[in-house]
Length: 69
Image (cartoon, rainbow, N blue to C red; front, side):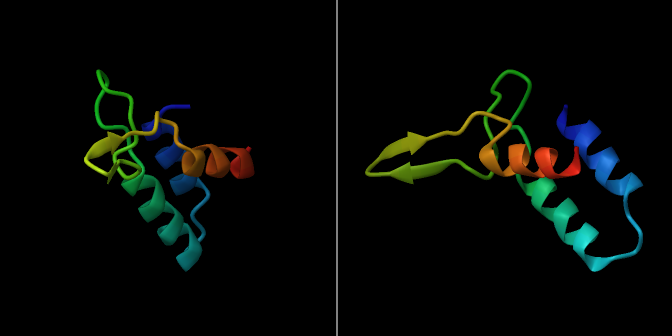
């Protein structure tokens, strides 16, 4: 599922609960960098001068998708 599809799915499930808003915020943070670089925007880190990247969908997004399925 694409990032936009996941956001739309969560918005459809919105029943006014604050938890849905928090979930949307997490999904918005964990977005792909671009179509050319499919890395999670939030999961990038620097360790001892090396850049660590995580492919999108990252473990956070995969878990959210699994729970919503």
